[in-house]
Image (cartoon, rainbow, N blue to C red; front, side, top):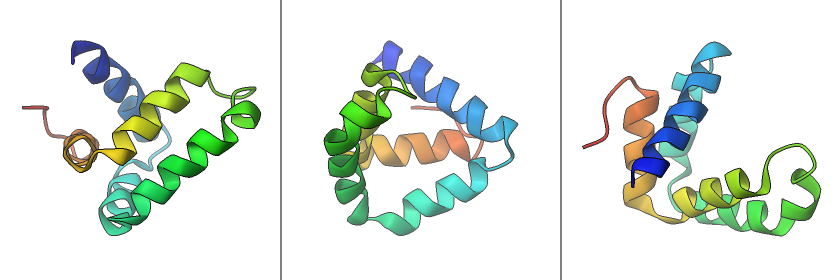
Length: 84
């Protein structure tokens, strides 16, 4: 779990740096069941996106999107909270 927290924090820092962390959190919240489709898209596009983003990062992002509890934890981080 510690590795997940570190990766999520890196993602959150990146989104915060670009000023889009709140928008990303809102998008994830609004996405609800569509997050699973987004995860499947990441799995499908991994050979292509893997040239731009580390494949293990894509896999971890897809895994997070597939698990509602993990998605909610990441949303909390994006909104400035802590992981419980």
